[in-house]
Length: 261
Image (tube, rainbow, N blue to C red):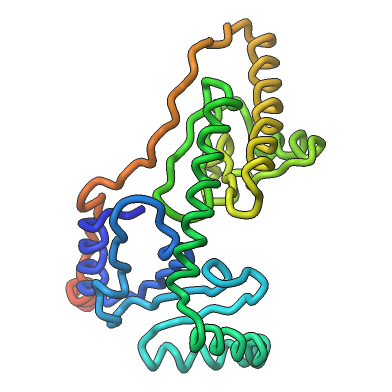
């Protein structure tokens, strides 16, 4: 999660460069610990930041209905694109959501979801500590629906998935989260869709598959397997301010091009 200082710095850069930012925040209301952070849209005031939300994570996954907040000129283009893609979202789904928010206290419902997901997150964290090998590490998310686990570099999780599926369990290989080939030894684990018993069993099965690969690697290389359990890794917080790449200002860039022509 991006720190508050880095969010503010990003909004400053966006304003300086007159850039549009698309903020996709499907899990912002599902927070299990710590104080909620303001979205970029709130810090920006809606000038350069467009905000996306969804009801599929806070009401019902089957609705496939969301919303967008953006400057009017951008909304006009979005509406045209939407009409060209599928004319419009299901009217029935829209009416159902409207009726629900008119009649029910949606905050209470989101609160109950948060309690359920917090318990499932904690169950998965405990299962990881029990079933994954000591070479593995993982995050402790303060919100959302996923845990990010990282295995030794010699394990390719795309190949590992094929082996895991034979045990009737699956995960998302980490490589799909990057464009540059990183993440090959990582995986994304979801804890929202299964009860606690199934989470424990699923992690146990994945852990057994991983341990097989670790043992095979040790046999082939002669490297001994470490015996001590590794402590679960806390989610890494962004450094305040983050790393900002200096870019020429738009006006200065135009001036240089004009002078050189």
